[in-house]
Length: 112
Length: 114
Image 1 (tube, each protein chain N blue to C red):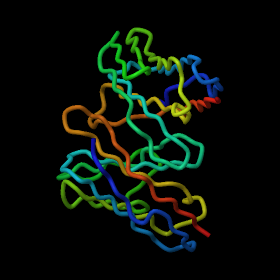
Image 2 (image 1 turned 30 degrees about the vertical axis):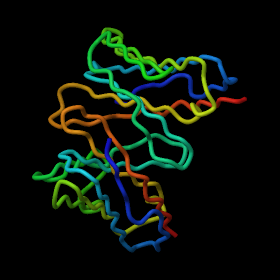
Image 3 (image 1 turned 45 degrees about the horizontal axis):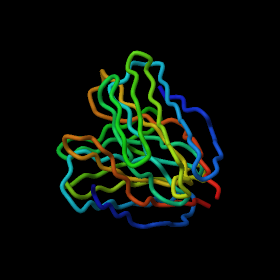
Image 4 (image 1 turned 135 degrees about the vertical axis):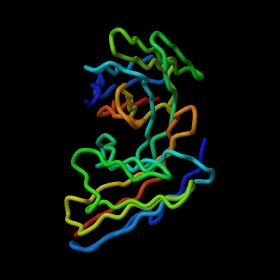
């Protein structure tokens, strides 16, 4: 089942904050976040493996609410380089092989 | 991280022909994946190609149409067979680091079928 991302798109001015949400109708084992710039491959940002886990990298952080089956990506004091499409990928328990199902993506545009 | 290369980077092919895409990784990895991505769309998993086992295909993808080889821990190929314009897309390979499951993607192969 494909996770649902919101919003679909967001436009920021440099220095503003944004939150991108990823929710699933199924129980989640892990949530992965990726950023893809136009014409490039997706780039790994972070994995959240445990319920309630929070991680951060530079001014980008994320949380994972296992009970609510959702994750949020927080971008603070956005920079021009943050522009791109953000995808969450979810891993659900029960399968015989590890695999991710990706959301439709959130297009983030940061303007000067 | 892992450095992944794909060949070709792009190709224009005629309907009914086949194209084999190569994926080379700079380190040994067990798990490798093939995805398809339409421009501006999400990533759709075609199959998982773990070394030492048969490829596992997702719903909607079959081995006759997308045969995969995984001869060793650093290389894989995906063939798109008997192509139609609907196969026009970007095809990406990715690998998952053993133990951490972080996925790293190749640059993609942009395929256009005429």
